[in-house]
Image 1 (cartoon, rainbow, N blue to C red):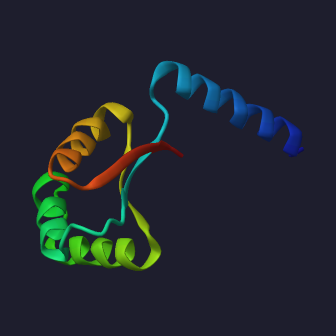
Image 2 (cartoon, rainbow, N blue to C red; image 1 turned 135 degrees about the horizontal axis):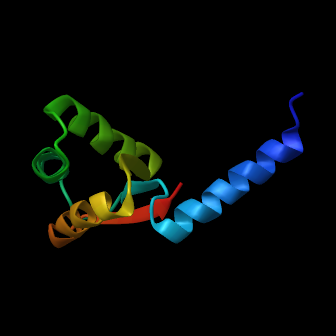
Length: 98
């Protein structure tokens, strides 16, 4: 029989284990700013994140209209170099735990 309390406990234990081992899922979030152009943001997403031009344009518009957009997700070790590269290009990016 399904027990929601057991499921919640199992999910919590999995979250703790993932956080301890560094295998938790993270998001790379791009934030809006007042100084980068759409062209620069799009070019950075293509160059550093491997987006195609259409995906990069959509992310740029989401950032512009909603203030932020998740542009990648995965392990911290995968996202950290991407975040660093975007930050070095003047973009406001941050890694957040899902």
